Length: 427
Image (cartoon, rainbow, N blue to C red; front, top):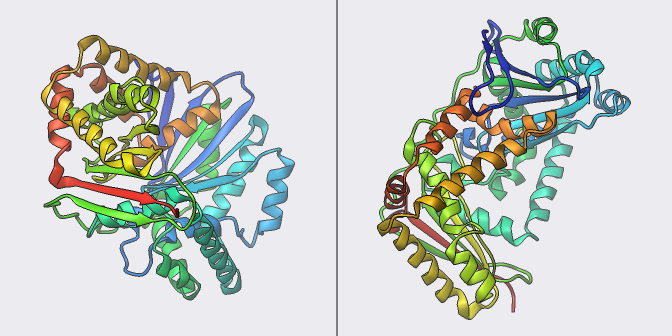
């Protein structure tokens, strides 16, 4: 519970406060704004849906959490949030579920009362459950009009065999269809995953740390722990390239995704840090391939790398939207040439230093309001339950050399570990 001093990278002091029941709160005071961002991070996402036929429940439960409690039914909760001038919202990812509000500092206790109540005493009947299940299936069907949703679903389903990353956050369609029959299962899901020892409060803004800790004791201290981590299936090593062409029922330019297996997030793993920088160096807006394909030749609408962080090994993906079908082989060839170059050549030292500085300052420049700070930190908190990982990651990045970038390219850009998805629309 010691105060964490402002570090050489993260610009704010913060304190980590742990309750005996396992609940962790990370408190970041930002004096003067008059606002507080209140984030409740449940370290459960679609990754944790290990039971066959039950994919999509983490996202589904995001919906159910707004159904209210006996003390504060949904309409009362909504009215109180509106009266505070706030907007209660949430989102679900592969690795976590996040609930958040931004309120004036004088409403902090009121928010804590509301949020602690629904996280401990959520109440809904089977009729409400079935209604929400139908709404989730409608959300899935609506997503099918988006070619990116179709592409991403196919990419995960093709790239993974055993791990729960095989399905998207919203889940497999058949599982979503069957959700209305899962009322009893939903109650068990809440009891298993919505426990204090699986939750982190991230409270950022104009707050008194000691007073906030007393409120946390009062409103969360009696929440009974009981989280048991699920046994996530290990993904077997991929033995060969997988290529799939996907048809989209609608008009769209062709989309190509080239995805390689990565590693789990570890702020101390130099290859994880190098891969993150590699994605921008090889496929970002300052990259040679971007300048060639997007600007000079205008063969593609864009090209970018998505080399993000995940709790378990997931994908390092290159996305591009090609303007003409006949240019797909050429674009794929250019991607392969770029990959081969980074596997064999050393990146220019000055360019690497510029990219490292850009990564550092783009992160720091986004830490300007309580809400922006909390939103930028949420994934790191979900992955590690701490903020030390941010300091260690950026320290790791600052020490990267051209040899590290080449080693990361050699480690991850392995053709046998690659999945290629090509999506085409109707003519």
